[in-house]
Image (cartoon, rainbow, N blue to C red):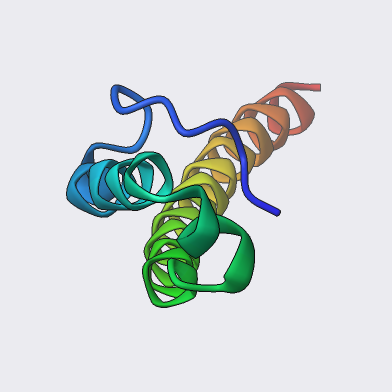
Length: 80
């Protein structure tokens, strides 16, 4: 299962998304018998890479915010 495939949200995977949609529209038989599974697996890997990149960025941003907060609290404690 994957998230909604909005092209503006997954720009790195746009080509794979379009290819999967084209495969699904070209033949219902291929859609339901696994003819598009290779594209779906490629899409899954692409979305996973996007998610890992986003997770890493969020973790780094959170660490920076935490350091700033700790510095502010340390300054407040030093003044007290």
